Amino acid sequence: MNRKHLSCEAGSAPDTPEIPACDYRAENPFMNLAIAEARTGIHLGHGGPFGAVVVRDGTVIGSGHNMVLVAHDSTCHGEIAAIRNAEQHLGTHDLSGCELYTTGEPCPMCLAAIMWANIGRVYYGATIHDNALIGFRDEVFDRMFGDRRAFGDLLVPLDREACLRLFGEYRNLPKTLY
Amino acid sequence: MNRKHLSCEAGSAPDTPEIPACDYRAENPFMNLAIAEARTGIHLGHGGPFGAVVVRDGTVIGSGHNMVLVAHDSTCHGEIAAIRNAEQHLGTHDLSGCELYTTGEPCPMCLAAIMWANIGRVYYGATIHDNALIGFRDEVFDRMFGDRRAFGDLLVPLDREACLRLFGEYRNLPKTLY
Image 1 (cartoon, rainbow over the protein chains, first blue to last red):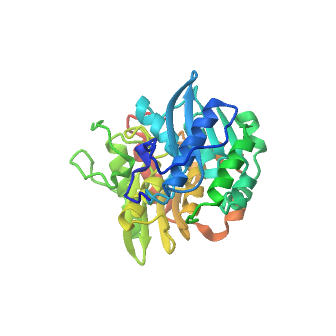
Image 2: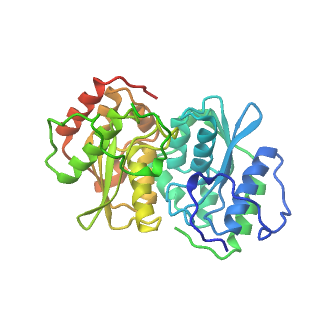
């Protein structure tokens, strides 16, 4: 397992032979890329099963996955990694006109980050409740921050079934929770 | 003005002769360090007047300031910069036992980041409402995420007056809002 220190800005880690072939697919191609990001992360021991891509006008302009463990960075969730990666590519802190695809519904930190970045829509696979079922604290934090009615149609569910397959794959791997 | 690209993980930027002497002080020494971080940031054009330090057992183990503009990173608020900096120094994603001092009450992104990092207490100067008065969107976002009653005594006000002097200093500088 690759445990060398990696920066949260690294973007997509290179695919390696350590990552087994995937036997499930999302219907949406961008969600498939988010799943591929997440699979890279979980099989290399980088963190939780959370990958994300930022898309503008049908083109991927940034991607990333959870690297909390390997980057020693509690803020390096998949969405934040993808946002930072996109912003580095574009040379701006403003992602107006962009959409984000993520394997798990954003936690409050990532949801607020999405708003600061002016991302207009988020497609997510697994729900906050699904995140809790694999051991993450998103749901506890989410309750403290209130519900999500104020966010209108910013958050759109998509391809939950494929993302639950990803979560199942993660559940069967040796891992460190945080 | 130094506009070269800087990473959000850079930690404290070096002090330079461009930063004028400060004619106000916080009573708490750690808040003074957070103010010094913020002043470095605003005088170098890095972003808003938000600096932070992470403290463990009376020792500063991380610091940072808002570098949204210069780092092209919408997630690089002062608190997140300081958390990342502390975690890099310690080689961990877990800041249990640490406290954070910040010139402005954390926005929802930073507040959730503080919780993911397991920081036990936050001392803040200016309030969310003060942040809004100098043009930032914290208060709008904060309303969407509900109020802060669920956070108990995690958030402790401290040295607001000195931080409002900092905000006044910022207000008089040429700047870019976001």
